[in-house]
Each structure stands twice: as C-alpha cells, then as structure tokens.
Length: 219
Image 1 (cartoon, rainbow, N blue to C red):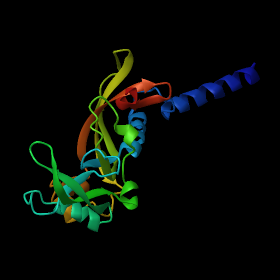
Image 2: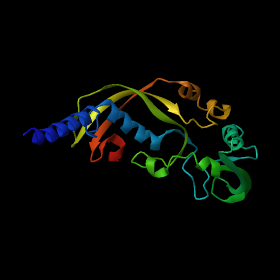
Image 3: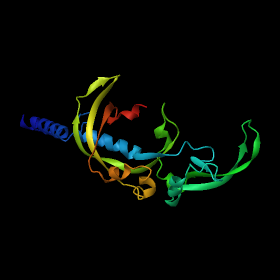
Image 4: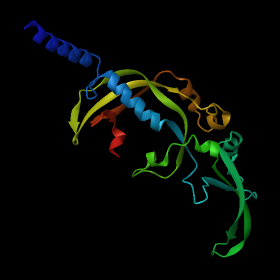
C-alpha cells in the first residue's frame, strides 16, 4: 500500500512545483507577461521613420540642388550619410512648365539606405497594415521589461482572452549612432528615451495556442 501511494505523492508534488514556478504558459502572471513582451520587442524594437516609402530605385527622400528650393535643407539626411546609414545619389530630372512641357533638366540628390543602414531596418512586413504608409523604420534600440506593475484579470474580448498589462521598460542594445546630433537634433526626445531606466507603458496581451503574446499578432 505504501509503495503504491508514494509515486502518486511524488507526481502531485512535481505538479505543484511546476505550477508554483509558473510553467503554465496560459497563466496570468508576471513571468509570462514579461516573456511575451520581450519576445514582441525582440522583433519590433524601438525605431524611427526615415523619409518616405522607397521608390523603385530605393530613394526615400530627394532634393533639388540647383538652388531653386533652398528652404529645403537636406542636412538631416547628409548627417545620416556621414554616419554610414544612408547613401547620397546624384541625378537629373526633367523640368516642366505649368502646361507640362519639358523645359530642361535639373540636378537632384536622392538618399537611400546603405548596406549598413539596412541592417538596422525593421522588416517591412512587420509594419504592414491598414494604416501603413510604406515608410521604413530605422531601429535604434530594443526595449527590455524591467518590471510588471499591474495587469487586469483576463477577460474575453472579441473572441480572445485579453489582459491589459502595465509595465516599465528600458532600452538595451542601443545603436552606436543613436546619440549622434544628426539624430538628436531631429528627434529631440531621443536622448531622454535612451538614458531612461523607467519608461512606463501598457499593452494588451492575448492568449494564443503558444501562451501569451502581444495583441499585434492578430494583424
């Protein structure tokens, strides 16, 4: 009798230990939420939009260089060229009068991502959606969860189980160019974002077949 009970007790103890350690991926707990958020940010990272959607030649921004549009200063893009993130390409385009007739040629400079810059781009397919403009995003750091502050009781919403999670994160793996004045002049909030160890945010997490995940997986 004693021998038959002992295995059962051992199995029960193991089950309790697994539960205590939070091994159930569907459990609403800090460990699962932290893992889901970090997995999301490992792909999405923290990024800024640069230029417009690339054209067929990869150009994301262009300026006329013959002095006709001096109010458009390409200094920001030239700064990214200096950092090795963009390449500048010179070419000519037709000039036309108000009736659409070609009247000559004008000199232009266009900017596209360099091979080095492309290594920092968020994959384009990750930004697709109804509101996508096709602009590429240059990623400068990866959010890492510091603390789960609070979360709501999981509840059904539009056919999925959702919990709103409040948390604090910081940036890790910050790109070496992120603190350059070429970026911080354009994005004045960037230095504070990079230096902060306590950025507060909240996100909706949902239950999937693989446990908790960021709500963006529903796109």
